[in-house]
Amino acid sequence: MSVSADLITLTAAQMADKLATGEITSVELTQAHLDRITAVDGAIHAFLHVNTDEALAVAAEVDAARAAGEPLHRLAGVPIAIKDLIVTVGQPTTAGSRILEGWMSPYDATVIEKIRAAKLPILGKTNLDEFAMGSSTEHSAFGNTHNPWDLDRIPGGSGGGSAAAVAAFEAPLALGTDTGGSIRQPASVTGTVGVKPTYGGVSRYGAIAMASSLDQIGPVARTVEDAALLHELIGGHDPRDSTSLADPVAAFAAAAADGDVKGLRIGVVTDLQGEGYQAGVLDRFHESLDLLREAGAEIVEVSCPHFQYALGAYYLIMPSEVSSNLAKFDGVRYGLRTLPTEGPLTIERVMAATRAAGFGDEAKRRIILGTYALSAGYYDAYYGSAQKVRTLVQRDFDAAFEQADILISPTAPTTAFRLGEKTDDPLAMYLNDVATIPANLAGVPGLSLPSGLATEDGLPAGIQLLAPAREDERLYRAGAALERLLVRRWGGPLLDKAPDLAASLTTTGGEK
Image (cartoon, rainbow, N blue to C red; front, top):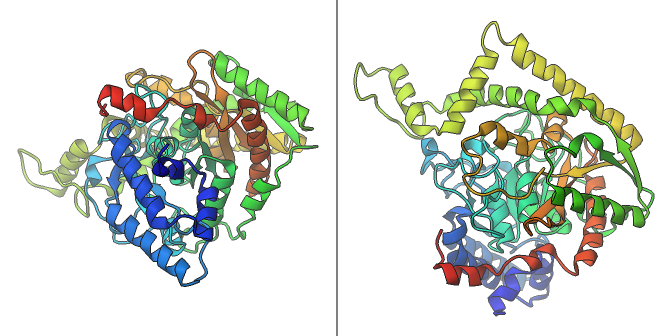
């Protein structure tokens, strides 16, 4: 293995330690990841934009500051990738949509300000389903992203680009957004770690809104410790976000380091398994429960009876908020402008022509559904009823957390399906989020980590941990403990068992 390959397979925490001791430089580390992107991203298509010059310039700044003895954040010099839904000065922010193709933001999101202040080189912007609407990253206007475990399969969605980049060793860390599982579900199918923080725990200022009451920025990583380190960096109160919590940032990395499940009450959500779940996914899930039990955890069953209605409620609340949030993309103020080909030139006709040309099928589907649900005469029957179900889901969580400290379920019902397999059946696609959506409706934090490989196809499966709101620290403690148990069972990190991507690209010619 080359020196470059040795660098990119380290965890972010290991990279940080080697940078601190001077064993490696940030320029070397950043260049190694840029070289990896050049080598494999033609096949994976995780990135929509690669930020070569700025990333290397920031890396050089870090090296100079470290040589001068200046105090630095622990992650200073460790590269990161950013989901292209988060606005970033100096790079295009497209939201995966033609309507924003080439658009340059005049300001940075709060999380980007924090990343710049800590001096993490930003490698680039990653692919996503248009405006984060999808479960497979097949709804991007700029092409599909491919799963590094099998290039014919989806990397999850909407943040498949971030998860694929981390799984393919193109980046050690990434940011994603999670509206109904868009961090956790891609983590599940790519063998990575993804965290949806408590709603309001990380500022949403500068994340292009899809569904404002559900969206949450969070970390994508290869280990629970790495996710904890990134969460500590991006978390905290932001007065520019009206939903931001005033809570101080907890010691997530310390919780991950001291993780122990002895005496922890872990509630198995009986409503999030069974029919529709792949046998191999359930096998790995039950093996994980056995490991937790052996480690001293108390395993109890909990029922959340209203979770069966969560998917339906979500697909009324989310498109309703989408229809409102996407109204600003009108061809008048910024982004794409398309003129009507015939008839009078009016603002209304410019808006109609622009939105018809700029939005893809899934975005249009959700805008129309949401507009209908909010329309006079239907508001109470649809949107109002969905909000009542949301309250019942929140009450289910409250009751469950009286019986258990942590809830547990498979993250997704299946492993990664083949590209194109579900694009003609939106309802089948929506079912991929059945286990992740309840956390967004209730605002509670969720963490997905790899539970192993499904026997049927040898692809990663994920296990999801859920904690009460504002108890993210509890997630990291339990998640890190389970991760250590699983790594011992596998004989090493799960990504070590992934196919040799470089060898497969040599065979296939390197492009998909």
